[in-house]
Amino acid sequence: MSDAESNLQAAERVVALLAENGVSAVVIGAVAMAAYRYVRHTEDIDLGVNADLSKMRFLANALKNEGFDVEFREPDGEDPLGGVIDISSDFGLVQVVNFADRFPAAIDDSLAGESLTVRPGSELRLAPLAQLIALKLYAGGLRSKADILELLRRNPDADIAAIRSTCQRYRLRGLNAILAELD
Image 1 (cartoon, rainbow, N blue to C red):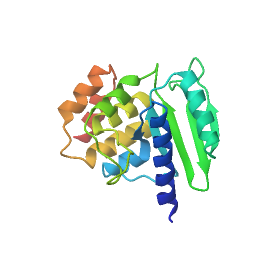
Image 2: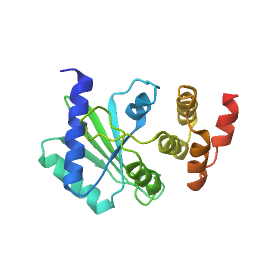
Image 3: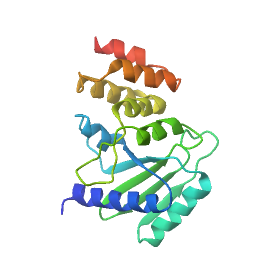
């Protein structure tokens, strides 16, 4: 079994365990970008969730009890994320990235939208392109800007008006400057 396949299987196990505990997840990051024709080398699978801090602690313990190596990094007051659970083993790394109390709308809207999955029969749901771009804008920085540019270049049929509307609804700035670079 390839490393990518074992990592996908581990992520599917993690998503199932999260769901058993009342937490839905959506694939974000490089794996989601690859689904939108922008392949960037990655060693991990990122899952976006909305869960309060006590639920994140509970999930970290539940994952440990399932035999995973787990590290839970709690947020501080300046952290733009609500904590991250790193799950690792021979398969690689799966990260559960919490946006609750920080930017929950992008995850909620991803879960409420069209159900696109990593592969047929998988429970690994992909963030829609508009939410993926919004998450990149939220993250900020040069790498995220470059990711947005590449996502838009590789998806020329993307609904720019919908992406713009999504980012405006979330009160995110910077998309217009990035769009200007596409011209």
